[in-house]
Length: 251
Image (cartoon, rainbow, N blue to C red; front, side, top):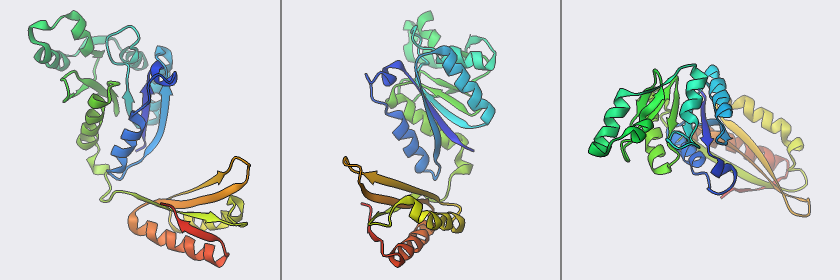
């Protein structure tokens, strides 16, 4: 199963706020031996959110969507998901209980809008203030506030996807290669061999170029199971040494 993230908010796209969700969901997945396959940033545009959710549901991915589930006019995620599912919005009974438990006698219709979700969804509990998110078809719709959303995402991972966890956390190692023969096309045969010999690993090559346009170094490495990573790195080192390419470990 692929894992994706949708991050909603005009304030992020405008630069008024710095996104904190991408790095955290990637970190939560990596700690469980999983990997984020894609991330999409969207503004507060209902039809765009609906179209994106519709596509990701068809793909069968597990998706964490951050932002836009509040009750103000610029929050569109709840309505967009209802549009994508072709259902109406209703007050979810479990969400209502959580909201009433949170606000007591101060509960009113405006606050109950926070529990008005697309018909047929499940709630995602919020340990921070009891205002839940919701889930449907492996999609988890969470608040934009990191202190709420990130524990909710972690709960969803541990509750529904534990069978997919690897027994190890992945590691990433890389060399910084320098010299005349360290450009990518010259090392393509080596990269292809590593991919063929270690298919469970993710190989990456990242050239670095200075302001004058000259190549500084090539970062070449792999990510995955620690034992396989060490074996692949040994194979890479032996080959670059055979080609008289200078190398050092990336710190």
